[in-house]
Amino acid sequence: MRLAIDHHTRYRFSSPQQRLVQTLRLTPGDTHDQTVVDWRIDVDCDVRLRDTIDGFGNRVTMLYAEGPLTEIAITVAGQVLTTEADGLVRGSNEPLPPELFGRTTPRTEPSAALAELARASAGAGDALDRLHRWNLALATRFPDAADLPDSGATAAEAFAGEPDARDLAHIFIAGASALGLPARYVSGYRNCGEGTCPPHGWAEAWVAGLGWVGFDPSAGISPDANYVRMATALDFTGAAPIAGIRQGAGIEELSVALQVERMNGEA
Image 1 (cartoon, rainbow, N blue to C red):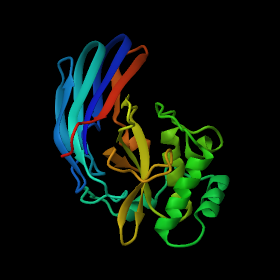
Image 2 (image 1 turned 90 degrees about the vertical axis):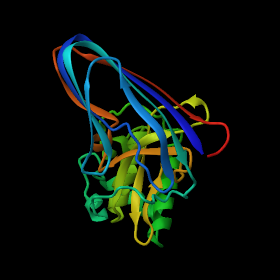
Image 3 (image 1 turned 45 degrees about the vertical axis):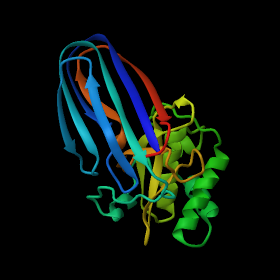
Image 4 (image 1 turned 30 degrees about the vertical axis):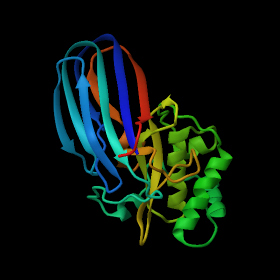
């Protein structure tokens, strides 16, 4: 499948900023089932951009801008070829051992109630079957979870409330931890069939003998050819599409517009 992505992010500041440093995890990597055909990042003001790879193996662009800045717009556009892999992640850049992702963070630490549901839902059997059952249980318990900006909620807090799609990814990871299985957060894009699709988040878990396998608890499925992987980390904080610091007073206003469309014809 050929997916065209057009992603616009604009920051407006109530007071001029002296300096802006941002980490952009906005460039997908190539895998056996995901090939970047073309990709570019454009910024509407004078900036310095430096491409690098972070500790998780993600492609990262560092952005440096000197003020005074009252607003800045970042545009990402490109095309990616994807193939169906039943959720398997093959050929990705993996500098870290899977065991590291057995660690939890404050955002993926399971509560007693969350861990109990994960164990009860997963049941017995091999790891892959247990993870699929846990994934489906979350989709059933929390249907129609929306793609919303990150709230900063922990898995335990979100589990006790009304989680969004990113929260469900953290809840899935926390449940996988309770099952003794390494898991991680994934940020990326999803073709939702309507052109306008918010940025998305899901999870991947390590299954011995298979490798990393994707799970999207907001849909109850493993990611298919409609998904584009951008970055992975222990939780959203390490995989956020844009993160950074600014020097200046006042508040910032963020607006995001994203279109993910399937191009006519196949590869």
